[in-house]
Image 1 (cartoon, rainbow over the protein chains, first blue to last red):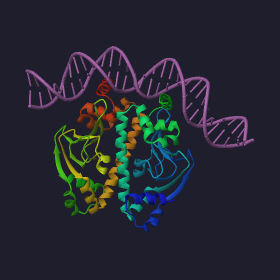
Image 2 (spheres, rainbow over the protein chains, first blue to last red):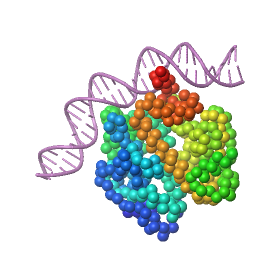
Image 3 (cartoon, rainbow over the protein chains, first blue to last red):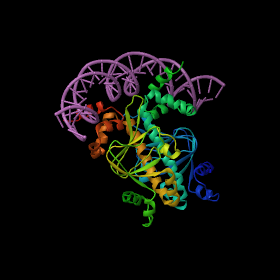
Image 4 (cartoon, each protein chain N blue to C red):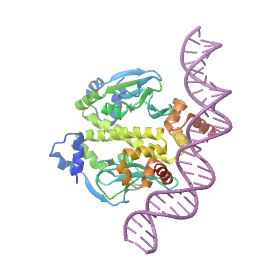
Length: 191
Length: 191
DNA sequence: CGGTCTCTTGACGGAGTTCAAAGCTAGTGG
DNA sequence: CCACTAGCTTTGAACTCCGTCAAGAGACCG
């Protein structure tokens, strides 16, 4: 189960074989059913999650009561509300399983111990966050540059399998518009 | 000049005093005049910049030819197009001085050497990127939750001095709307 | 002071939302 | 394995936020 994580780490830093076991020991494997919440708004985000199998999402509920998805996490992605996680303050976000999912969880305290014991992992997490930061810069560009229709078409072209995998209303809430409008877009782009 | 950087690093990790000089040596101090470009679209983002004094912005030019600001960097912030910087691929972004600015620059090669010589800095940069990642999650929330008017009011309340500091058309391009609309908002909220 | 850059104002249009209702799909239990 | 139900998607009409264009008023710099 922790194999996936060890493999992923090894892509970015070289890991002595005998460390794998000790590192694995820090993580708690958990399973969640579709729609199950890993965390709810008002709570502190206690865990940092690594997705082994399945799909998670980070979302919040806006003033009108509808869910807005901030981020998805597929296999080999990390997810947390990082503001809440690092400062152990209450979060405004939910984390939910989009599909039945297997994840590895580590709390902030254990993560500090892990990093203290294996400082080489600071580099791994630095790279993870740097890539996320880079992705956020590009996402920012798209939202300023394209109409919502172009965003959907671009997204559907870039991640065709992902679009198949999640329900449309989640996609709409991620791209920042209504399911109704997504439906309209799709009918327009169907010959 | 590198004092500001050393101070900033010391906020996040404990740094043996005698390392300060060696670390400083990796950085090139540079000055830019208001409106001067540190980097232009089509080039590779060769440097990672730390702002000692002044203000930088990361922006691109959209299909209609108008500038869209992705990110500002004030004193003690880092800035780069991280996709371009890490992979040394050509960038679609510009980096420009909003005010006369003093910065420290380090290229990707030197940064790798720096991190190799002082692995403790991996932790520093991990924290920097993690905070940026956290900020991106919250920015994402705001753009989904609020109207443009609410975004401006919220932003103006959160960073009143910054709003004074930069021209309105840059603020508008950062918040994702037109200077005309910003003007309209301001007149509405003036009694 | 002259010219360029920045901010304001107003009319109009269009992309995207909201609300409501009906059609479809998939999962669940009998 | 079928039937039922809850959840998801589609459609359409009215409405709103915000962009576009154009023209003028300030403001800042040499």
